[in-house]
Length: 438
Image (cartoon, rainbow, N blue to C red; front, side, top):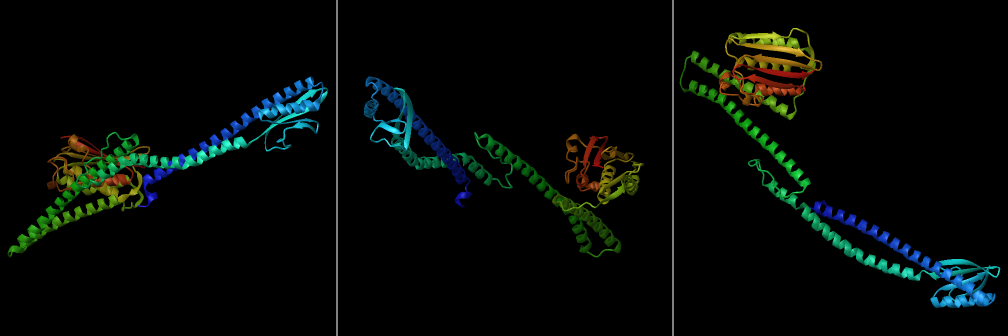
């Protein structure tokens, strides 16, 4: 792995860059403040010396009874003892000056004006910046020497800090490597994790829970599908084996072929349902939408199953008289209604009643299929839309279903941005309500 692709290296580099920037800014600030402080101190000293020289000049002028040159020389002599560079001028004429005094020094200066004997004198005190430059040079050397050492320590500290901060991620990765499809119930655990890592662990564990449920559903689906496929295949093979064991009459061959044909049809329907659900899960089913009258579709569906209802001794009532124009996939919605009617007829005892009603609201349409059948237990009502799920012993393969009808109903409703709900009283009947947006 390249160095800069390492998260630890990136954190260390960012930490080092940030710390370096702070140190450089602090050094610039410290150097600037020190320079201003030293310069201000020198200016204050020169101002004080200029005041002293002005006072001395007045005193000497009075003692010498107006001897200007002598007073100026005496002031320069006394200030020289203090180590200052002084010049006393009258106008542009220099009365006296220190030997090292220059008219335009590369340093700092302070000046005072003195009135004596009716004349004006100017006193200037100056000092070079060599001392300040020397002190600043010491500070610069200290900064330049300390900078590499401090950056080296900061880099080491940043690396150790990044290593310690990322250690829980390593533990998480190690635990995640041990999780496979056979132990998805395992969860990642980190003791005393930081708040951010706790959120990450919780999110990852929630993902594992969803994957565990999905894998469990998939395993059940594969097992149920295998069972449903195995039954008709076993019947077909058994009938074929029996028919081929010895010579039989045409009637017996016809009977065997009829059984084989029925099971083949059931097998074909099962495969079609599985294929449609697989395509729906993959998002490969495109709705063929157009405008049609939903009430007419409901009447046609009731007409197609009325013969089956009469055979079972059931009353079928269709309440869809008002015209209701709807935009959707007519073939899929037809299958939705047929599946709901077939489910209601299959689980309603003789003498019962199946009712289909269509209601319209301001923004949605509701389709209700009610029956007076065996009902669904409360524990099973939430799972009736799962694939291959049959609620209770009364709902078995002998009723002719595969447990896919209601799953297909839910898929069709959701593909039209709608919902389907089940309300049931065990032993008294069920009501399936499909809500579709207009």
